[in-house]
Length: 345
Image (tube, rainbow, N blue to C red; front, side, top):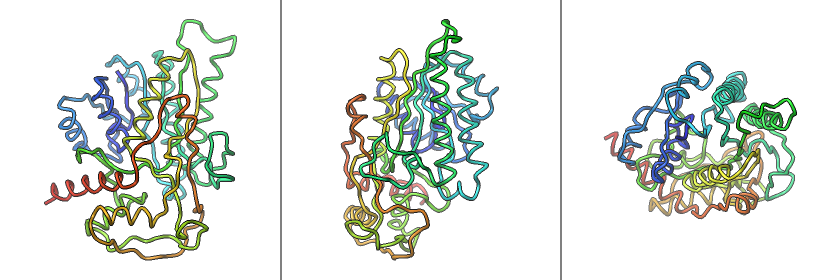
């Protein structure tokens, strides 16, 4: 059984769907700080089965330990944490607490229970301003926000834990750590069923949900931050990856770890090509069938012109690559948002 922390979130729910479709049982752990129980209902409708769920904060070590005692957990995919770049600047202590302390709490319980296979959610934000494109895993790590710093700290914790496996003092009676660190670029899209997708609380931090809200009439227009970058149309360029492709990378990482005696490896998950803000907006307009309003405003401090991945390592070692395009991201997102709108009505 696979434990999914943050299991009712955007990525956790899609991971649950893919694993259950493959016949792999899961248990979902979530504190509901950025998700709701109706996601569990949607998942159970999609997968046509009851799914075990534990309302637990991953920082609560005793509660997490009880979850491990109740279920035959063999591996963990760790999605739980805070992820807003802008919010992290305003609330740095919360980000270090949730992201770093949350991971330490989880690893402590995993070590105690001898469950040592982990797929960890990291981020391309740890690269900071790219020195060259596309960005390989070997690029310099220079995050510019507390969110990025918290994820870099988490990666260091994982490296140190794995390094301890090689020390002479290590007990021979325990499993060795098998860890895959996945650095995401920009997840977008939704499950093709229209049942699960990204439901931001408040103003969306990500481009595609914001465009979807403009298309739904919830927001008057899209604010485009700058049109004077050295890019194809002057707007910022990012590597958008369909959530289904991203989660398939997690499934591939779990499969790869199962064949390893020990591991602590890093993989970029991206499409390996950049898409501008206006290109994404126009793709969404094509799907919706009408132009969507936007307004050019000043650049945001700290934004880079272009960021996109070198994802060859994941293709070579995990036999994974992204296959869905931007139009599919827009189509699946729009299907999900229309279903949400109908449900509200």
